[in-house]
Amino acid sequence: MIEAKQLTKVFDGKKALDSVSLKIGEGSIYGIVGSNGSGKSTLLRLISGVYMPDGGDIFVDGEPVFNNVGIKSQIAYLGDTPYFLPGATINETAKFCRRMYPHFDNALFNRLIEIFPLDYKAKIATMSKGMQRQAALITAISISPKYLLLDEAFDGLDAVMRRTLKGILIEGAESRSMTTVIASHNVRELESLCDCVGLIHNGHILFNDEVENLLGRLHKLQAAFDRIPEITAFSGLDILKTERSGSLVRMVIRGDEDEILSYINRFSPIFAECVEPSLEEIFIYELEAKGYDSKNIAE
Image (cartoon, rainbow, N blue to C red; front, side, top):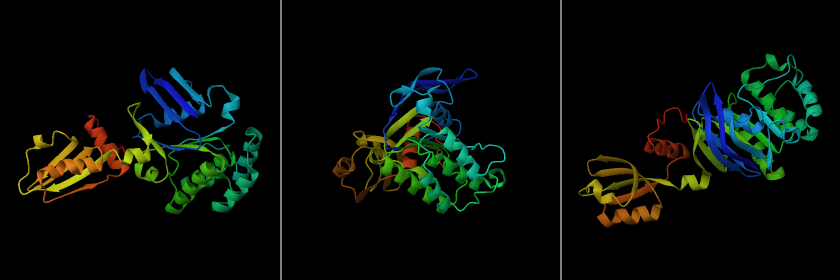
């Protein structure tokens, strides 16, 4: 399990992370969503032990990570700009990883080099951005880590490779309880993959829950009336947003769908229906309700 307690990191007097607390369970595929500069990459580097906290604690399996060789041997961290040894090929990179990581899985490596269509004897530096990302993923996953940390994992991958990677990550969670943490600014990419998602903004975790729970927390209501009641009539609902157009009212409401419709039906609408928003829409509505700028949260 990964556990952060009041985790804080400061750069040049500015808090990149400010008292962040969260837990990520074993075998989970956890998504960290946020705009550029929100603190996603900093959080991954603290979890992997690249950075030392300036405040609070970060534990993996109950142990602090920084300078902990035993714990780090179970973590594979792939940053948004992968690093490779100068002039190395994929095969040479794998040879290096075998010496560094005791759980390197040769059978898994051989399977992955069949899945990803690359020249494994070519120098990685001569490959395209998408191919370099695939090369980095092959070696990171072949390490057979207990914890796989990916920063913008799908960047540069085409649709087929993105689907392939998702399948590999799901298989890793199911077959060997691998925990994957993916940082991304693209909510839609993570919605169908992750079982838990946290939204980070300006160094703070604003939401942190299972995707199933997050998807049920808001509803978009559309209702038509012969005569629209005054907005104050809906004061018993937890309304985030309201729009009126003629006889039609649209609202974004927190709460249970049946309870929302039961409340609306008191006013004898011509029709009323609730639509479940996407995870991306939920984050945007919640951010706006809290007074945050929702731009660049998702693409």
